[in-house]
Structures are given as structure tokens and as C-alpha cells.
Length: 460
Length: 114
Image 1 (cartoon, rainbow over the protein chains, first blue to last red):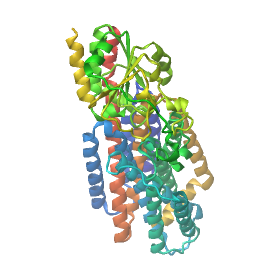
Image 2 (image 1 turned 180 degrees about the vertical axis):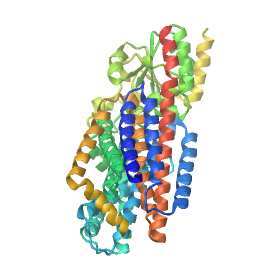
Image 3 (image 1 turned 180 degrees about the horizontal axis):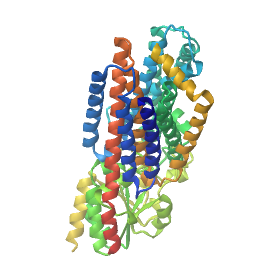
Image 4 (image 1 turned 135 degrees about the vertical axis):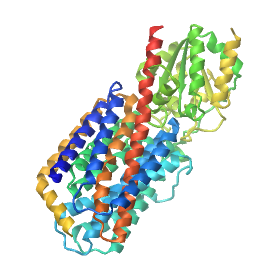
């Protein structure tokens, strides 16, 4: 009877997950979607306590309370700008959990004849993928959080990584092919997989992190799905596989938006200096004062604001929207232009602008806005860099050549709010800053926005 | 040992090929669900799918519940801890992001009305 109840509950949970994800794919029903999925999760978790022949309930409850408590506390406190690394962190935890399940199962079977080869193989594959997703996600988290700066590269790195991977898979095959393995071999397998996850992630630059996080999200899904097959748990099988497939597609969509094939992201040296710098940018950057920018915008017909992640870091989105409203009240047409990879992930910037209260009907994506730059009087670039670099169009040497960009340089005047003269996140020189129609407004995003507001107000 | 026998029979009850069908259908479902998603929802959706694989908690609980010795118990404990973090953290951040999408509707309407 209880067995049937458990089976029905897992089935219901799987249905709720799929319906929830489906609802999350439309803005109108999205909020309800996560609640549906949440109900499924609570149901599945509670019913699992009824599983026959289990023990350790007290410790189990403690573990759930601890893990859930820490995640709840951090999740409620994290700023919207830091969402991507939190997703990376929680995703890594999921991958680690899948690896832990595999580890316990494999420990059970160590030194015993293999009873079911497929199950054994799936356990090993799930363990490998989950462990890589675990350590890789933690490195991605550390990078986005700023705990780990720059990229780590050394000669023959890819061969070294390949060697580690082959060794890991080799031990995995030995474990999977016979029951005759020791705990030492298991430990070596997991340690090598952990190391590989780290090695795979450290050479990847910050700009590519969203694609990497999305990839690890898909990998964790797959690992969970495989462990679901191992445990014979349909809820895990379905939810894990669905996420694995959806995550893979999402990774492709993101990589396409950046015009960077996934293999490039993983195996090339993006922003690593060297020859790909295309450093022959000539001319000089021309500074401008806030007062002059205010005049320029206040008497413009159309102003396009191009926000990037730097704006969010400076927490300037509220001030920028205030500025936008003041300009609107003066009769200026104000539009926001969002690059697909503005922020740290596709859609991240929309979330940040929504937080500041910017209405959707004046936010435009790349395809909609690019033809409009030619007719705009002022383009205000704040905290964006690579996504407005005309070298992506003009310089085949540039590492970002071919990436779709916002054609900001085509507008009559460009004003770039920037903290200093340094290079951006990816370390590529931006030709836009040296254009004749570009002026640089140096300073902190939020301070400069406040300054602009004050100056425009003074114009009456 | 008993549990493993039981788990293994569970899987054979589903059957290798039936499991393959489940895998195939679930993969197509995942692909279809996300194919029509507007870019603005990519981040919340990634977060949402991150939450959904938090179902790993169920498996971690079973693994911990069947632990035979201290080592397995410790690893199981870590697994449950991590899985609970995945599920709860994934829910909280997704919910926070989507909540904002809802509240931003009102200023949108107000602005459009001007």
C-alpha cells in the first residue's frame, strides 16, 4: 500500500515538474510555474521518508535542515546582480549530491560480483558527470564572486587535461566493468574527477562563465537522471533527463547569442592576450564632463541607453531609470538596448531593469534596436564593453570577431560612462572608446548618473 | 545487500528498454519545453531547471537511509546536505526573480497608459 502511495507521489511530482517548467516558459504564468514545481518537490521529499527499510531518519532530517537552512539564508540575501554565481553554487551542490549517491552505491558493491552491468555503468557515468559539475560549478562560483581572479593557463594544458580525463575514465571503466575494485580505486576515481572539473574551468574567462554554468546545469541534470536509473527512481529519471536536455539546448542558445561555439568556450584561450588581441586600435579617448552630457541629452530627440553588467555592479539602474524618466518628461524618447548576453546571462539584464521598475515596452533587444542607432542623438553606454565593440564587425583578428554587437558607434554621439581607462571583463581593447563621436565620462556609474540627473534638472 | 537486490530488481522491473524509452521521451520533453522560451526568461528558467534537478534529494535520502557503515553514512549525510541546498536554494532564487517579473507588470501598464 505504502509502495503504491510512493509510486503515485513520484509520478505526480514528475508531472508537476514538467508542467512547472512549461509554465516558467511564459512571463504570465512563470510565477505559478515555480510554485507547481515546488509543490512536487515537497511531495516527493515527504513521501520518501515513508520508504520501507530505511534508517538514520534523525541525521537525515538534520542534514536537510542544515543544507536547506544555509541555502534559504543565502538565497534570500543575495543581491540580484549576484544571481548567476548563486545558481552555479546551488547547481554544484546538486552535482555533488548525485556523486555522493553514486559513491554510496559503489561502496555497497565494492568487492562483490556485478549483478547488473547496465546499472553499474550508469552509476559510474553519473558519478563522473556529477563530480565534474560539482567542482566545475564551485570554480565558476569562485570566479564570478571575485574570489578567484583571472584565468590559469600553462603550456600543454589541453594535453594535460586530456591526460587527466583519460586516466579518470580509465579507472571508471575498471570500476564499471567488474565488481572487483577497492575503496582506494574509488577514491582515486572521485579525486581525479574533482581535479578534472577544476582543470576544465580555470582556463575559462569570466565572460564565458554563463555558458559554462548552463553547461554544468545540464550535466548535473544528466547525472541526476542517471542516478535515478541506478536507484530505479522515476521522478529522478524524468526530472534529471528533462533538465539535462533543456539545459543542453539553453547552453547552445547562449553560445549562439555570443557567436562562440561551445567547443571554443571550453577549449580556446579567450581573452588570453597573445596574438588574438588585435591591439592596433589607434587614436585617443576623449573625456567629457557630466554637465556637457546633460545638455547633450536634454536637448536630444532620442536617447538610447545601453546598460551592461558594470551598471548593475555600481547599482546604478535605479538612478539611470530616474534619469530616463526626467528625460521622458522633457519630451525625449528614451529607449533601452539590451544585448543578448548583457549582464552575466541571457535575460539577466532584463531582471535587473525590472527590479528598477523600467517598463518592458521601452526595452529592446539587439535585432529590434540596431537599425535605430543611426537616428539616435545620444547613445549612453554604461557598464557595457565587449557588446558594443565595433571590432567584432571590423577586425577579423579580434577574439570577439563575428559576435553580434549593438551598433552604438552609428549614433550621432556616444557617451561611455566608465570607471577608468582599463580594459573590460574580457581584456579586449574597445575601438568604440577611440571613435571620433565617442566621449568618455569617467567615474562611478551611480555617482555619474546622479550627477547627470542634477545637471539635467538644473536646465529646467 | 538486500536493498541492492531490491533496487536492482526495481530497475529490472522497469526494464532496460523501457528505461531507454523513458530517457528518450524525457529528453524530447525537456527540449520542447525550452524551445519557445523568450530570452528575458532564460535566466529564471535556468534557475528553475536548476531547482528541478534538486529532486536528487530524494535519491540522496534513500542512499543515506540505506547506509551500512559510518563511511557510507558520512557520504550520505553530505549528499543529503548538498541536495537540500540545491533544492531550497534553487527555489528561493527562482521565486525571487520571477516575483520581480510580476511586480514590474504594474509600472508597465501605467507607463503604457500615458
